[in-house]
Image (tube, rainbow, N blue to C red; front, top):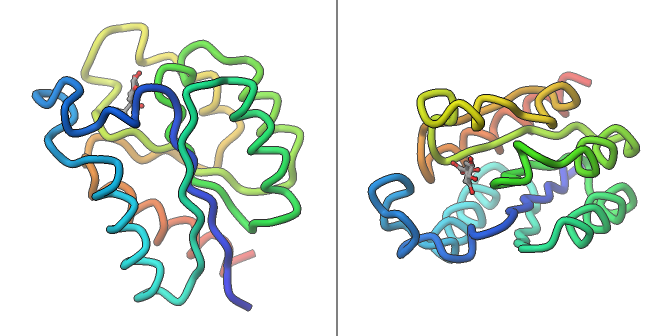
Length: 147
Ligand code: DQA
C-alpha cells in the first residue's frame, strides 16, 4: 500500500526564506515543498503539503487528514508552545504524528522548550533545518511500515 503523508506547516512558515534567516536559513517553504515531493517520489509515498496561519484551520486540517492520509508531519510553529486545541486535535484522530521544527527549539528561549504537542506525537525531529523534512518522512514511513 502506498502511504499518504500530510505535511502541515503552521504560522509564519510561509515567510521562510526572508523570516529571521539567521535562525531559519534562506530556504523558502516552496523549496521545502519541492524537496518533500522529490523525496516522496524516491520513497514511493504520496505527500500533501499545506500551510496555515490559523489555529482553527489547522485543527480542521488535522480532522480531515483522518480520512485522507496515513500519517502527519506537523511543524506547528509557535502554536507548538501554546495550543491545547492542536494537542486535542492530534489526540482525537487515530493517525501517527511526527513533530518537526527547523530550529533546535531546546537551544533557544525557555518558552520554546515547552511543547503541548510532544506528549501526543510519535516523536520529535528538530534542529536540522530543511533537511528535517525528509528525515521526518523516513521516520514516519518507517513507523507506518512497522505497524
Ligand atoms: C519552529 C520553532 C517555533 O518555536 C517557532 O515559533 C516557529 C518555527 C521551527 O520550525 O523551528 O515558528 O517551529
